[in-house]
Length: 242
Ligand code: TA6
Image 1 (cartoon, helix red, strand yellow):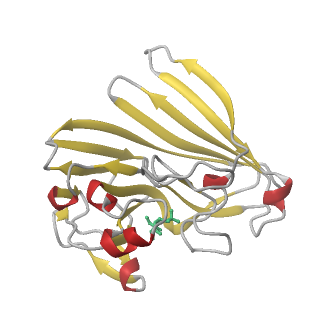
Image 2 (cartoon, protein in one colour):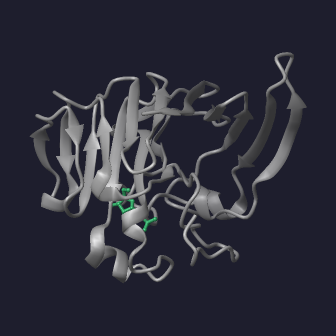
């Protein structure tokens, strides 16, 4: 969480796991990353302890007069599920198409992962995966390395990417393991570096040194859900000694 994160009505919170839905980034007619991450209409609809002792909370967002007037006017129910287990955090989206026609969306869980020092951090598991380089106008490239390193701004949409990725933190001696469902085929890797970070009002100038974003999602190819259909995608986060 950024020390300068804003929590006002309609603010996009700089940190945690923002929900980019029904549009990732500028890939469509809506505002950057869609309306869900800014919505104040999320309701807690379930809180339970599962038989294995894990704690599960579900927050739900449905279409509203405001969303129905947007450039994505569909009837929907979106559940955001959070399960806190013994050493695991699972977060996922369950989308229900409540309308009469197919709907399409792009989406991601825009996870901000704290690291000891970005200079000693790598993202592993992407060797041989194609990516769109957003710092080079979306140029399509191939990841040649075992580890993605950070020597400047990195903003890449990888996909289709393997189900398990790791943020390996050399400074803190740990690795954050990200296991994603196949329904999240893609992974975005982002660090704004110094100039972009300085331009973010809700982030201290040096904060880029202490986080990387690895965002599981469906970005390169939109998801299509038929009328009455459901779509589910989750990530399981664990932390292990590196
Ligand atoms: O992380 C991918 C990305 O699309 C980057 O291009 C950058 O814009 C980032 O999201 C943050 O977006 P935001 O609208 O939260 O400033």
